Amino acid sequence: MKVGLFGINMNFLAQPDWARQVAQHAETAGFESLWTGEHVVLPDPRQPPSPADPDTPMAHPSTMLAYLAGLTKTIKLGTGITLIAQRNPVVLAKEMGSLDYLCNGRLLFGIGAGYLHQEFDALGADFASRGARTDEYINAMRALWLEPKPEFSGQFVQFKNIQAQPRPAQPDGPPVIVGGASPAALRRAVTHGNGWYGFALDVDTTKKVLEGLELAKARYERPANLGPLEISVTPPKPPTKAMLEDYAAMGVHRLIPMLAFYQEDNILSMLDKMASELL
Image (tube, rainbow, N blue to C red; front, side):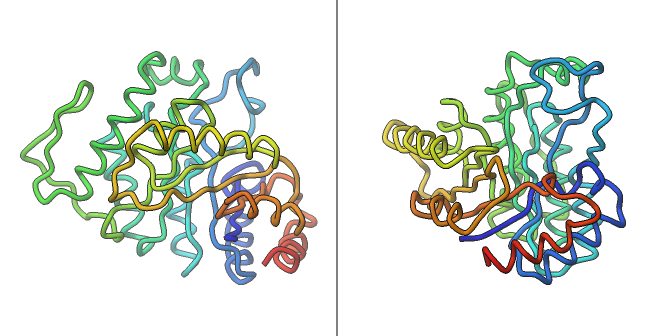
């Protein structure tokens, strides 16, 4: 079981010195990956379905990961998740391709369609078409990363006669890890993703979602070049060895506990304790 850590860009970890300390400590302790959360904006005052108070610090994922890439050597760097339907995919492909290039191929590109309609409104992005845009943007980004002469013609994106250098360091581009537990997200993971990511799911809920994922695999064709679907889950409470074993037994490949469970005065010691128990 791989063990990562979620929230390296949030709350007090949005402060660069704390993020540096935790990232370097996690790498030394043997954790596999560090993951960011993302919301460009949050509604003020807080209102459903917002996941956090409006004044929650949340540094931009690629900015924080680029900073940490220069301070670490081996730990993988994940976006958990990037809401790509809110972005220009040509710009985002350059942003994430550059990040993968700068970190020597350590990027794990977690993506999702998004659910916070207030955020879409503030960005001038169409909420209703977010699912279709997400599917298309994945394909457009891969064209920019992988094709010798990138060209794409879709409903929302069209380009040809262009180049976007540097390309990602990973020959097949950063692995696309699809977040979400809706039927559309599970279908997207099967048809477009190298992996699937479930956030704040306990063991029982994870089991039910994985059953849905198996149904999606039976219903939708999976391109052979995507390889086996890697399963990642963030549990809703601090992890234990028994919890890790329960997730592993049902086929989870990576557990990504939340750093938000810990405070400035205990986070480094708690990382050591977690590493001793889980790694």
